[in-house]
Image (cartoon, rainbow over the protein chains, first blue to last red):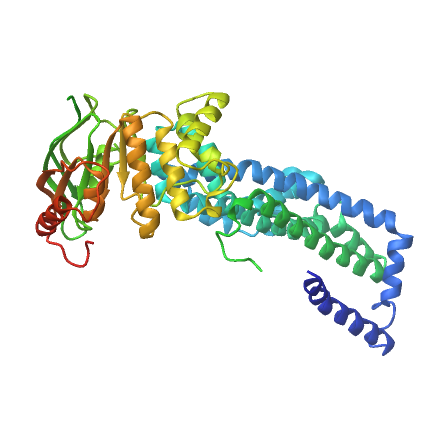
Length: 253
Length: 253
């Protein structure tokens, strides 16, 4: 674990070093490339701004991905289970998932105005497809014998869904959730640059207009850090919920 | 003796791309209540297919199957299946796995726990209730499968090469245990195997299958007293006869 941390942090430390060296060597004027120390100062002096905007972004992603989860998981379980639903939806899913959510920003603004609604709608869409596709994939991967066991026991459809299809699909659903959270986080920052007047995306765009490159870099660091934390969080939850999988699959790392 | 399972003119044809495959043809068989019947044959002779059809998991292409006097239309409430690859749900503890068939019938949690405990004791699994299947040995997993099948007090146990994947020692132990359970519960047992010795150790009657298309080539009564020893003269004589009927080669031990 210690080795993992040390190795994980090494590239970041090298990047920091390169940054500091570039500042020392005056590759760019300080107004464009502030020293690491100056950026650190942002977290002391402007912490309220950073925190408020980060909270706004995180809240949007939670709501948006929460909605995608609530829609995609039940829908995916059913599409995976019922062949006719698969035939009905397959082409549509393949078409709509190829559309980058960002390209829908203009439409979202036209229909939903400026504010939380268009950005949440876009996050919802960016999380929907990975979750849906992975859930379907999870249902398809169920061992056939297990379905036979349920049929032989004359289990009702609801019990089959709840006790067999859902738990069997959970590992795949969590893979989908990781991708969805990543996609949602990318989308929120972009959406905030255009469609909203708060959040980290808005903050860094605004910082550009006021020549606060320290605030821009601080914002980028926060975006990356939250992305890492969110990913680790989903991983932990997955490891806990799917602990029955231990020993069944090859070690993940 | 009353007829418990009855097959009349049962055939099964699997449609193929170029030509249809006839797995079974003209199977007539009557199995009395309480009988221990082994279906013996090489792999690919249709014996497992017949068991799956008697379990209501597959439909015959022709002919009829009746269980407990009712023509089969899907899995019968009077029969329980033990699967070759044990068919345990990896996300459920041993306890939950054993409770599943009862849960499918809507039994209350307290009742399920009580009955599960009884059959866990009977299958020497006391103390393993909270383990997950991957923490158990192959023999123990199959015991869980048997315990699960017994919980609904079925009149017939349909066993599809249940000990096929086990080492010889474990196999022998489970065969003994199965006979003890059978003597206690007096269920009808249909047991698919490709092992002549296993069939002779267990069965009252052995149905020998021949392949392409699968048919019953011989119906042999085994009157040897139990417990049976493979060294006894009667045993060896029958084994020789069966070897001739099966057309034994290295496939059959």
